[in-house]
Length: 338
Ligand code: 13P
Ligand code: SF4
Image (cartoon, rainbow, N blue to C red; front, side):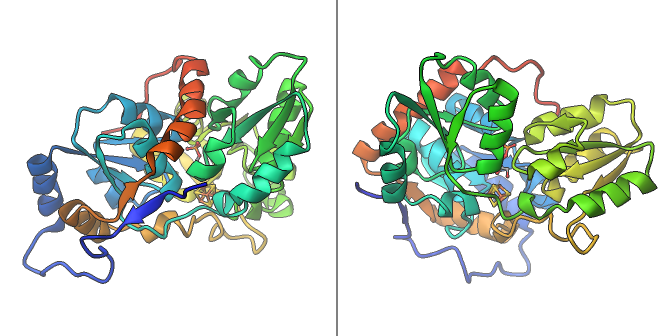
């Protein structure tokens, strides 16, 4: 199978520095206008990237936004698989990402050839794959899901079909329990979400007896069992806005707290702890590779640019389109504060 690749023809955006007399935000905004670009950012990006973006959302919101934009260029601030999904959906647009090394531990855990061998063991099955995966793995799949639509999509799979799910075993385990469907699980994990620690969480909950807990389904079951709400990053944001509770413990990547503080500044939002009792584990090292400076150079030089062989793009597009077709319409509008 041909692989996707990052085009670095114009030179990498890394190791370049902006002249000190230029204001980086002004420069980004003027390139945006000149090139008719749109900046999409995930909730796990740094506050300054979230604040300069045209749209901030979860994986599903961002995929939808990528299909709606009329911009010529999409500057995708997240991790590589997200930019790749935008390119699969928009072959005629330029899709740039700030750092080509911004990967994902789930994607890394799932090599296409190993995944092909894994799924071939199961007959009469539907291969349901989390969007946190490479284009090559998507191409081997029947339906792509995100954490916000997975449950609704799995409930639409006929009962007489077996389900193979990858690459996140915690999300798969949670979905299996929620839907009552048995699933064959690929053993991948998110290095960020699996670090939350149950003992430390219980200590924190005891110290804040009035608190509620919101968790992403990539967390281990020992964390999810204490959660008052489990869902995608956007649903966690919605929960924090809507809950009458004034103290919420957040078991997901902590940069999402930036949007929560904008919407509900008076609430006490506490990152869930890791083994050492601190929140330092709740930082995605891949998301953290992006910076305003790298975004500026990516937009200016149009590199790193996502390119995909057309055959691979079409193979990965099929399950991605199926996801968009099978996704319930959003129950709430994205309530990310401006
Ligand atoms: P969402 O689908 O909630 O945006 O999550 C993406 C992700 O990478 C979580 O770690
Ligand atoms: Fe991947 Fe985890 Fe980072 Fe999300 S938080 S991008 S799943 S490593």
